[in-house]
Image (cartoon, rainbow, N blue to C red):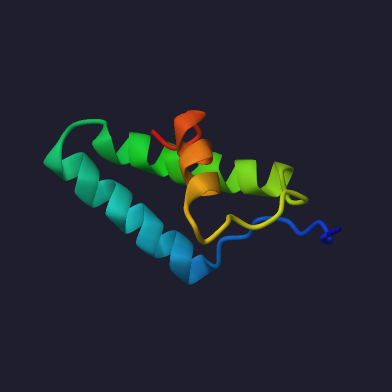
Length: 73
């Protein structure tokens, strides 16, 4: 199936919550929030670049393959 390319977007409200979570995680452990924030942005970039990949199979095999490839650590 051919999906239209759409940019990954974060609404202002979602960005504010994401930044608040980053700050909270940084308060728990130095640098943890920065790593969290980078992972979220990297995941969005991956989804934007691979927009034409079919959705994950509900059986979980595709999700495991994505995680095992190292996209989510």
